[in-house]
Length: 148
Image (cartoon, rainbow, N blue to C red; front, side, top):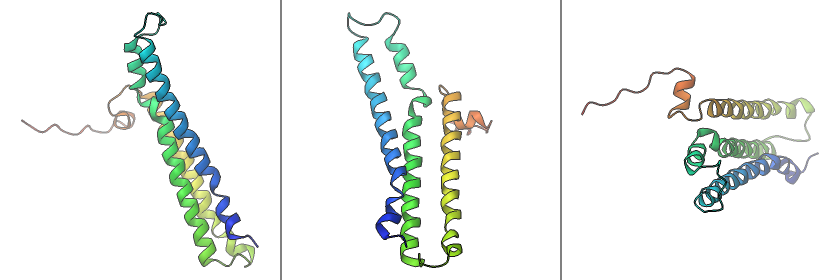
């Protein structure tokens, strides 16, 4: 029989990976801030311009780590919910078929999160400089402008 701490503890990897992606985003932002500051000094790299750095920093592809971190954070919270549900409402000493019934939503959560993260990364890297990457990707109609 699985203990409560072990059931909840197995959901930690999603939250740890979420922290990793948040840290990667913070490091990337710090890199761009440092490079922008460095580009204004006499010791700058001549091939790196402030305009190019600002253009790269403003792209949607720059934020994929942040968005992936939120997907993983949401997945981790959902998995904690499944674990707590299993602890409170399922008899873990029951036959394996009963416990296996909860694996479908858990597997679906993993697959859904992976799908969202991959599609988001593809859209954000392909349409990195577009104002509305999702609209441009799926050729959706842009909202009408209000007169006046």
